[in-house]
Image 1 (cartoon, helix red, strand yellow):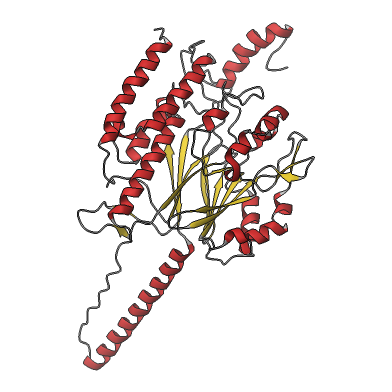
Image 2: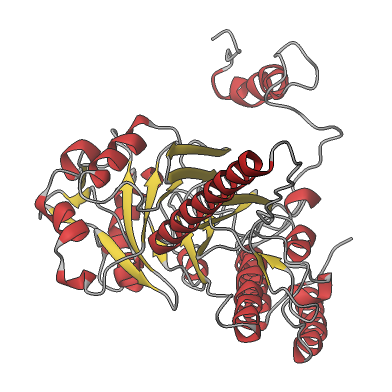
Length: 457
């Protein structure tokens, strides 16, 4: 079937009206919200590599940036409703971050031309955007990013990185840190790139080890006037593997200036998989996939929550010890009389105890969720029906992405394979992608160029 552009736009218009009607009567805060809310909550995307239109041919990853935007806005609405339902219990802040490597990967951003992709990215409400290695290979991309009115200027203080410099001026390409100010907590946020090599010489990637020993890093953590009012937790966008040794190096340097119970959340990336690790007792590192196959979610406590929980635990242990001592004294006074001493320690913190309040579990620990980037899964995570999640902004962005792809001819079907191929299969396996490449692509495509190309050279 050949689908005319006008037909697609009419479909968008019809669906838009449908979603608009659903939005007129929004749900109250859902009891089915399937996320572990904490003091600080962050939606994470990393290494999307221009897959902003999703993977339309793969139903398991069909969500696009418009869907992600809708998910984020509906989550904001639900958290606001929770706060209004009980302001004392529901004190949560929410942010959304991009951990770099937004370019390359699809026809939206190839050959050093980010001009089609950047307007899409600028419609996302990122609170922090980090620098990835793929933004630093091509001089044209670098010039487009840092020209007056370009990508970096658009994001302003939200564009954060500590160890990438303009070579000629020896100045940072981004703001070195940002203080995220919420209703409930302030989060001091840094951006780092691994010790990259092979970048274009117009930029310099300073080693992480050298960067964290500069005066500004000490000042940001201790004496900077921008930090008036203090901060409740630290977040580090680290474009590197979640278990990279540099994560521990950054953590150790931060711990040199802050107490051991200061919460420190690392947002990792670069190595294109889902991973999560505990770095120390009050620090974890989370890496949320690649190519828009994952919408990551992390929640973590502020320092006062950790200290209050420690104080409550100490008080509870003291009360239990006193009760046991009193029971022992009673036994010694009354002989062998059986004394039953039961202590109800509870089952965690549940926000909203009466039946009319949403039963959303509150977490005072570090939590994470890897959400498949599928429209239905995003809606289910929020406890919404399919037609309840899309927002007006999300619908507009979905249509905008489609129109850009259509103008570039990216929606045109150029071929269809009869089976799936797996990169992980042995090259001798007929379903191996390597087998297809060696036996079909090399001799029939590359071989036509020089008359002799084979997998053997």
